[in-house]
Length: 196
Image 1 (cartoon, rainbow, N blue to C red):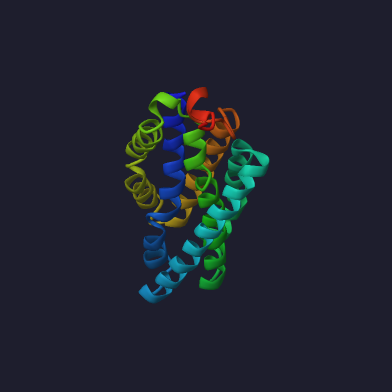
Image 2 (tube, rainbow, N blue to C red):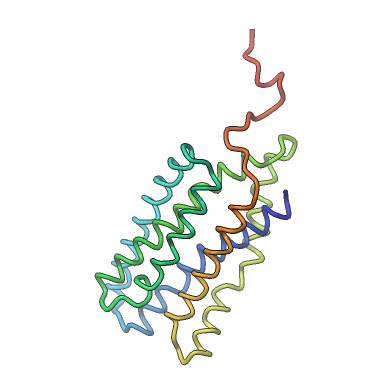
């Protein structure tokens, strides 16, 4: 369970950081947008992230954690071309909003999902440790994407698109074929009994 959780968090961190970290660089260097335009697009996609996290977090309570993560991750794939190849700043902002709606929508489920999967004895350690190890394993993401862009003659759009699509698929597969303990009771039976 722990190894699977670390792999899932590695994929999730590639998913999140792979769609955020060098996106402003792409907008500035490849699309030649001003700092003002890049900032405005960042505000729009961060609003998408908040709304997506709230929406998919609530949805996962109805349809299950795995199913909601899989839906969010898979829908991000057809959004990726709009997010990277839209012809102007307004459509790029719309693509970025949608991309972060689905990326952070999937992420909005992670805290409850990891806590539900955690054994009672290590619930205080398991989620954070799995998350941070996944983050460590994904820490080379920005360098990797910048290297891919350099290899493809400065084409950040293609590097972003490829990484986002591949990682979205990996997140969907790991989550879809992984574990779920939605609505599990925390603690021992004695702790779960109301006090007399």
